[in-house]
Figure (cartoon, rainbow over the protein chains, first blue to last red):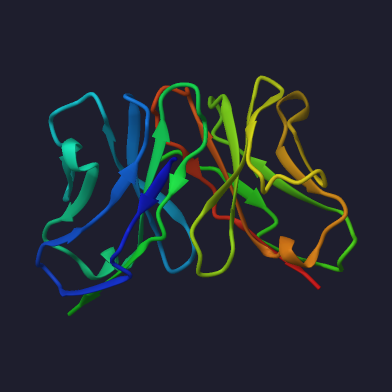
Length: 115
Length: 114
């Protein structure tokens, strides 16, 4: 069955440090796509970064990078040099293959960046 | 990044009434989606729409729900009649192609059914 699990409900870190958020997924497909989105305090949902299952290299976009561990079905999000405005709820999501259209979402991790 | 617009931002209606939620997807996108988020909970997929047809829908997409995009205008989600459990934030999303590309989300419409 398809499932995305984020076990960290909330994380609090000091500004300018590095934070890692965990996500594990379950799928029977050999081809799938993994995404991280953030939802700001206003409710806006912003796409951050994507990892295609067939790619071995970890994706990196700006100060976001992924730790893709395929044997463990894990896709962690790493944010370096955190800023106050990174405070948000971060969602991990998965889409399976090319025959499914929907995103399966995790429950989210609330990130609090303290000054 | 690409912008998806949703109108209205907030809608309050009485149970049993009809409501239409409007989405203006990114102009060159071909795939459209509706998701439902109950306050404080995770996002849940409702339906995907392409080339004038529903491609996939979840169990949450009840018979009272319908979607359409007449002549390239708004992509709409209609609920008729509404129920109390329909109260949630509804997010519209669009994507250019299907193959693993990211979906871009609108700001959501908060629906309150009294």
